[in-house]
Length: 433
Image (cartoon, rainbow, N blue to C red):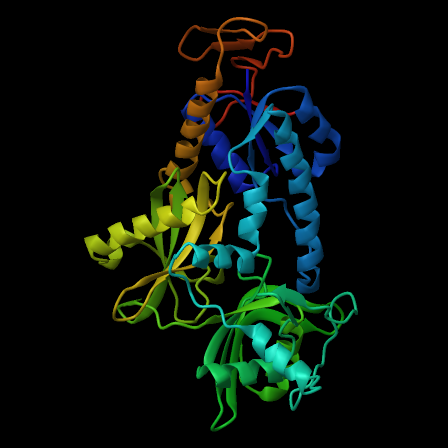
């Protein structure tokens, strides 16, 4: 019988509250810890599993390590994806699609191809190509920071042309002038939680500039993520910091004026499960970066006074976005509503963006719905006779015995006083061995 496995991190809210939800819906779950990945990954080839993948924990605050850490994660996701090829392992969200959404540039380009309205990406490759053609290395605002590995840009292929990454402030300023805009968002292609995300304003007529970011140049550790939003306005501070941020391989996005609630601009986080918006949360902020861990103000969307027809449009937009990615059952989708028109645009997607504190501390609806969907998928594959037959016996209010027997299966649990149960009560939680 196919069994549910959570691949995650012990002692985190993701693990604890999914465990609680599994208990509430009577779903047996085996837990696999990322820190033991090397020990148990081959064991996944020895049974039939349905695996939910939570993101690994990264200890580093160095933004220069974002890329290397992301590609380490990519290699592990590729290894897990190969396990599914034998037909014995199924994933709640396919490893391939988790990586596809982590790449902000590739994700947004796929949405654009499908006609999904998104926040516009600026064509930084054009400005970089122009700078390259003029022999320009950095212009007035020259480079003050090497790439993390000390290498030079080798460029990327886009539309059949060789294109360099935008890596210098001068290139950025020229691009903004060409596009006729004075403010942009700058985001590392990989990463989440506003790591390295910056909002930049520049007034060409006066030379005034402002940079809002959680990044900081540390004298010993280089470019680090402080998880605290700061504003820099002195070019002597802005230029060196911006130069280093641009080395991370960034996407540039138009900075839109957002809808506001009583003077506070907001965007939205939608958690979408099986094509349906299960939770919609407003994120209000006095500054340009709305991530809630930066002490911004969460508010359930129902309290924002968004018209009903717009809520329906958001739901359809989210479903259309999800449909672009095969193997994606659940995702967090960030959206904005343009000021005035309330036209919705997708900012970005995250295949592991399902942790919402305003939900887990209240109804824990998102994880419960996930557990229900996993249980439904397992039931659809369950066979009650033959080589891998299973027997189930339930007795007593607080005592269940769930036994999986057969040539390729084992006893999972006999639940009672001495067995570990989810806080929701009544269901097994064992470590994957």
